[in-house]
Amino acid sequence: MHQDVRGLDVTTTSPKAVAHLDLAVADYLNYGTSASAEVKAALAEDPSCVLAQCYRGYLLMMLENPAVFPKLRQTLAELEQAGGDITERERLHLSALKAWVKGDLMNACLAWEQVLNQWPQDLMALKLHHTMAFYTGRNNVLRAVVAGALGAWDEATPGYSHVQGMYAYALEECGAYADAERWGRAAVEGNPEDLWAIHSVAHVMEMQGRFDEGADWLDYSRDDWANKNFFKAHVWWHRGLFHIVAENYDRALRVFDEDLSSLNSETYIDVSNQAAFLKRLQIAGVDVGNRWDLLAEHSATRIHDHILPFRDAHFCLALAAKGRFDTAREQIQSMAVFAKDGESWNARTTQAVLIPLCEAMIAYEGGDHAKACDILWPMRNELAPIGGSLAQRDLFAQILIDAAVRAGRLPMARNLLSERVALFPRGRRGWREYGKVLADLGELDLAAKAHRSAETLSSPAAA
Ligand SMILES: [Fe+2]
Image: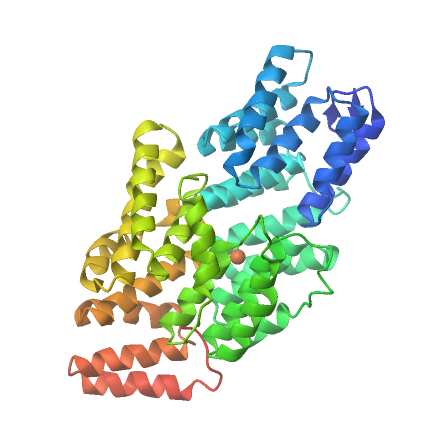
């Protein structure tokens, strides 16, 4: 038995294995590129180290690729068969991994919560829980679990900035923007490498309509983040959003071409960020050329994935936006089979939220805007289980507004745009769209007022 950098017991005969695991956790939390190599090095030191096996499994799961499942199931079976004397914490990590591989994200989260109740300084459990609470859209759980561990941490605990950054993000998703910014800025001050903390502050700026400030906050170059993994694309995505809502479309397209799509590789294409980005541009009336092609092509290879509803939704969006409706429908059929056969959280969410959402996107892209409205309107405030952030799910609100306008459902559009300008009062395009709908409804005084609001915004802002 040896202790990790925060004093937690690890069952192994090798102190070097523990040192490699510490490096793996630090790199994983900093969104570096060496976590897998460090876990591999730990396993080379001690192949029987169960925590190292779990970390390896976690990192494979983060690839979100069904190709890893056979290998993972085999590892889990071998670990179960081997038995052995492990700690309660390691047993819980094993059970979290097992649940996650089954798509049972709720039980995976519960296992990590049990870890954190007893060992609140288990940074890996905290981060994984944070990620999966995010992908299940449970903002209050996100906040409660970080807050519940927070008391055991302070500046002297290695990795403290990550806890501050996670708390910042959770507070932001719960609407506590001032506190979120305070925690996020403190995290970045403590660790300027902390991409999640940088990103948490950007979310606050997004939700508060501080678009110029946000673009400056995220002014990191490719050189600055040369040693960061693919998550940097999501942070650049946020920078691009600031340009979109400020109606700086040339700059937004440059972010797409230079920072987002340049990270595509033969094995990995970041469909979620890129599809959401292109769709927002199109809704704003920007010609995106042939930029859907590669995304749709890649999405067609992922239609049977069903690893995260959030991912599946964006694969469907890319297919429908490219006009590949047959493939999108095939994906929905595959979702239906997956949902019918499974009892996991993924399966239930797929049935209740993902399938109707995808039907709505197909209708919208196919020009049946009335149908898109009929599906999206009743569920517009119930989309959280699809996962992602408030900013990410805002795409579906934008699609509904556009569908309502195009379908001529003017009272619905007025309602949605009234809500939008209340949420984003600094958004010039929102006020302009609101003014147009009011004018079409004959409410000329209110329309003039809305147009004046658009004009008086010195800096163009939220969509
Ligand atoms: Fe984000």
